[in-house]
Image (cartoon, rainbow, N blue to C red; front, side, top):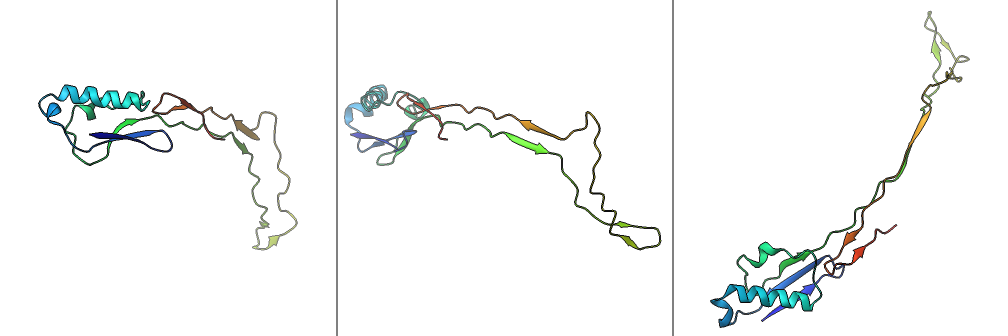
Length: 138
């Protein structure tokens, strides 16, 4: 009558209705109960999309019936440092270039910004269609 297919990553389940017996044509609630029973038998108990069950179900077409929640990775820490400008020679008033004064020494005072570190943020684990927690990789 129908089959339940689960993706390899465990985040999606599809149902394919191969044929519709006469007993379900007049009673769609029984078909919904049968589909839920098949999902339970396949251990699909998280992320079931109820709207799909109450809509038109085409024959011989895989329909997304359950969708898990993928893990969300956190952000890495970021280090921002004071940028030293590239040394450039000074041009003096008569148009000549002074190669000895390249401004290689940068003076800083107490309290000047030299850099900062932005801490990493943790990610959130996901949940597969079986209700198991999915930890983040890395």
